[in-house]
Length: 414
Ligand code: HEM
Image 1 (cartoon, protein in one colour):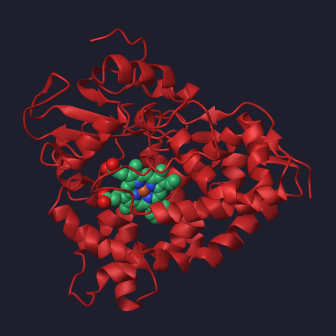
Image 2 (tube, protein in one colour; image 1 turned 30 degrees about the vertical axis):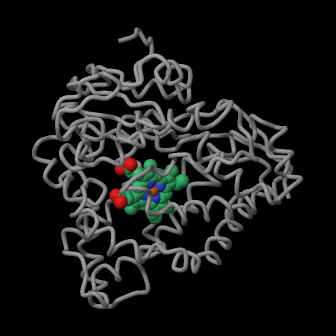
């Protein structure tokens, strides 16, 4: 074991951005690294976990659910309260095949390129409206004013949530993803931090999902949630509980991720002016540039699995029950796959990145996420070509998502 000098578990580590040097050392010197989980930010200590940092090992772990399960301990680093584990284990994200495959089959019908393609016109209108709102001002908070609303609008569309309720999705996602950040964390009467991943802590959200299901049963809409409630040609539909869990998953997964990817991608362009000029001169580079943003930023830094059996990886014994955390952010900077990984290169062929994960849980919203990013940057870069930083950025305090909460920018008003 090596003396790393960086705590991968501590959410404060990521306030300075991804710990790329530490990841690099781990990939070279200790690809299966034991990370302690000490008591931090009022949270009690945990048992610790194995950090997996090489591209090939992340691939191996994710493709072997019989060895490394998403279901046994769910998929977040911190162990849930025992009374919450049962509910979490029923979410699609936290199932293993074959139970996972059944739900995924039903749900993925709504995410085919054809169905997602129908959203394109609406996405463009909203991206334009977001730029229109700030263009006359000459300055704004890129993270809050420009990039937060598009994922919310789109998600509300996809889910058939009334547009005026989209801010609810925003608050629920903040509560879940921001629980380690002082701006969003919630505390009980005894001053203990509340773990938001429970039906109790999200009672308002589950009540909303329940009422929404009842409303859609009465009046079906043209949206994914309606699709789930009614049996399709193969006779498949979800139960009420599965519906509510899926509502929870989508509210978080389709929202925070993009809201972090967009400012992260913009920051990468601002920090690499030559690459920005290259992109401005050649629109055909936008598609690879989006992939490079996803690789470089890695909005979802890691996911947790639990060892289902004893095994051995690179001579390290992993015991049944051990926590294993795959670091997508490190795999995305693995020099054996991405030469000179620290370089942001808008022309890179980065198709092998794991920003959307890999294996059975590969992101269901990948096509939609890419579409939203492409349209957003098409609108933004042509309308505000001289946009630049106007102060310090503020990152999300989280050991799970690489987020930017505030990013002041200025540009010539138009
Ligand atoms: C840039 C944007 C996005 C990023 C970086 C991202 C990232 C990820 C990652 C890494 C996973 C894998 C989880 C694992 O390894 O266990 C995942 C799964 C998932 N994502 Fe995304 N995501 C994005 C956008 C979206 C959008 C827009 C939606 C839907 C509207 C979405 C819905 C989902 C769902 C439902 C899953 C679970 C799939 C399963 O369990 O089979 N994501 N996402």
